[in-house]
Length: 257
Image (cartoon, rainbow, N blue to C red; front, side, top):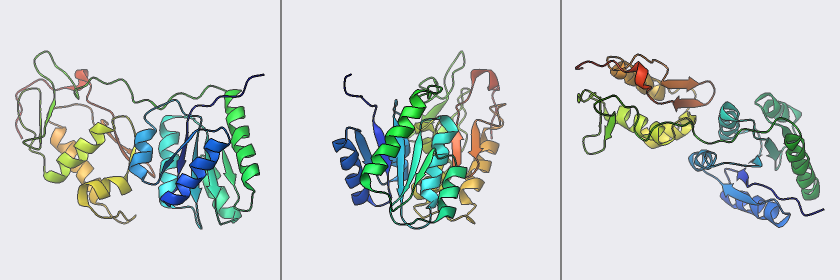
């Protein structure tokens, strides 16, 4: 029997050095792995499939970033996900991981050999069940939406969204940055932590409503031009996803804001 081949593995860890060491060890064991320590970079990689498995390391309590990545993956795919403690053996933390959608939660006192064995077992089980859909982005046109005359257009020089009728939507700086970032990752949920860093250049905290306020204002801005209130969807416990503007939802009239 020939040697088993695998699609790439993604390793996420807030500690970049530890992520690299884990990925290197997996690769040495025949599991080709890529290391990521930034949430946005990890989510960007998830758009390029197929993948064998996502491995998320954590130390201490399960960090919010780890759960956000796990929930983001679960939102679009059933690709196997494993949480691995590098220090903690707290049962409550592993229960949190399982409840968030992890396929396995590996305690911190397991040997490297057992970690590899459990990862292989998770991948093996996945291959003998329903095939995991890939994490490719939904098939949207290159522009946000098209009518018979002209497309929606993000005008970088004007930092505004131009409707098919040619009318600028009058986006604020935060609204433009929000839409621009979501459109680049169309179809993939983007965590509030990432959006806060990208738009406001500051960390996000659970009581921070700035991102939610920007999303609400942007929906109101687009309402006169589009019938679809769900083109910018809130993903509970994660952030927001932009699904695109469908042609049938466009209000084809000369509206102004």
